[in-house]
Amino acid sequence: MTDAEYVNIWMRPERPARGPKPTYSRAQIAEAAIRIADAEGLEAATMRRVAAEIGAGAMSLYRYVPSRDDLVELVADRLQGEIDVSGLPSGDWRADLAHYAHEVRAMWLRHPWVATVHRSLHSYGPNQLRLIEHVMGVLDGHVSIDENLQLIALLNSYVEGAVREEISSTEEVRRSGLSEPERIARSYPRIRQVVESGDYPIFTKIVMQARRPRLSREDQFRHGLDRVLDCIATAVTTPAPVLGEEP
Amino acid sequence: MTDAEYVNIWMRPERPARGPKPTYSRAQIAEAAIRIADAEGLEAATMRRVAAEIGAGAMSLYRYVPSRDDLVELVADRLQGEIDVSGLPSGDWRADLAHYAHEVRAMWLRHPWVATVHRSLHSYGPNQLRLIEHVMGVLDGHVSIDENLQLIALLNSYVEGAVREEISSTEEVRRSGLSEPERIARSYPRIRQVVESGDYPIFTKIVMQARRPRLSREDQFRHGLDRVLDCIATAVTTPAPVLGEEP
DNA sequence: GCGAAACCGCGTACAGCGTACCCAGTGGAG
DNA sequence: CTCCACTGGGTACGCTGTACGCGGTTTCGC
Image (cartoon, rainbow over all chains, first blue to last red; front, side, top):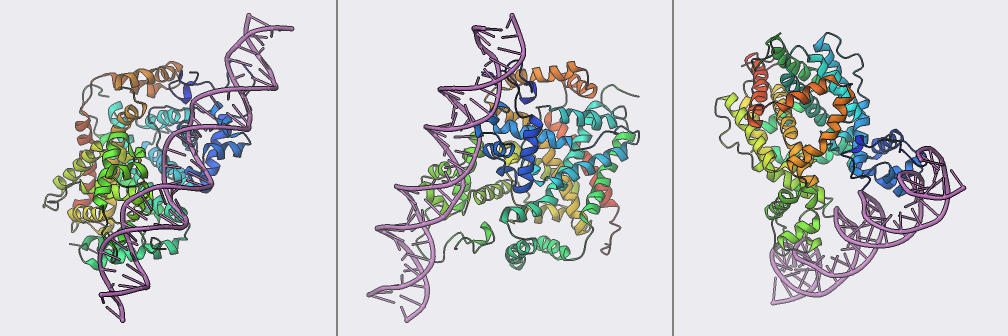
């Protein structure tokens, strides 16, 4: 009953109105979960494990968090807190968005298991709200709210997609327990099989191409990002042709 | 030992060289899992449940699939098989990519739980390969392989991001068991709380804007897609300034 | 034609998970 | 000072993925 009263975690006050002072804090719990996830992946951050990490009994965690999903929600919001957007609407929207994109990428690379987090997009934790304010503030005034939403969504999609790709090989290494060369050596037979079947000329082309030295991951990311920002630029310079709102 | 021999599911032959003929097929298993997932979400498609669905004993599934992750791999590839790209390099690259994007969106909306699937990007199942061939074939010749990879990745990121957003509210409805109006009513207090705090002007702006009637989901998707295709167009008309490969 | 080997389907068993429930102790509100 | 909403936490349950071993079936090598 007491938990069902609240729509989500963020509606529940951290400190109770009455009764003894809680021994632990949400921040402490989220940090512990992140520490475990960094070392062994998010699936290792079980309720018992996180409880043990902060020195609590297994079931005590449920005094702070109604379910594991909410624990993940806490973690997700804390990760968003790592993204520095403090000086964000600086006047130069392009530099601002590039900075934001690189911040997000850096966070994802620090915590590759974010790719496995399924958050509700409608929980509106404090750090999610802070991001919304700063990042959407960048284009606010230049474009309509609708366009702003769509453009930032596009940027987020690009960053997520690009970093997911970057992460996937790394994470496979972690999960399999094999080293990078071992993993490549192991996946080689399948690639060989596919290439040698002769049915996939373009895939073969990609594989052959991949042997050549390429740009660094970061340069690749920057290059794609520039493209996305160009795309956003056309929307910023050309005011929205939708209803109302002309500057 | 017998399983560890193979790099991944697709390296293992469906029919064994010796021994009795298997009673079930991979297609049958994947279909059963998809049927369950469509009805109750992917997490409901447990090994026991899928086995029961095809009329097999719980442990019999492991004769076909080394682990649940591989079952998901099977499912993921079968979902990719639902994407129709049969007539794909048609000559009109823009129409082709738009068609592909709408196909992907339609598949995601048919199976909203794909958002929770974590596939290895390097398993190279038959349908993934088929998609690569047809979709990358569209821009092949127009741009370098490197650019092709990057542009298709951008398109995929957009589609995924956009559809994820579309799905998230729908899925929340399914998970919570509440109806759409109930869910909105329940999340309303948090939104109210945030708006009334006065600390989040842009978020407030978004909320206010959201009350107005907007474009249909599909039109929104199409609009964003057009932007991405415009972005791709600049890369297609301007040949890549990278090493080699001029038409 | 005939072992032997490789496979089949499946029952049992186990560790680990999220979490419902219950308990005794605690500290602020009246 | 009393009350009771709160605390931390132990026990227990149903579920999960899956290791292992069984007896029957099919195919290969001879």
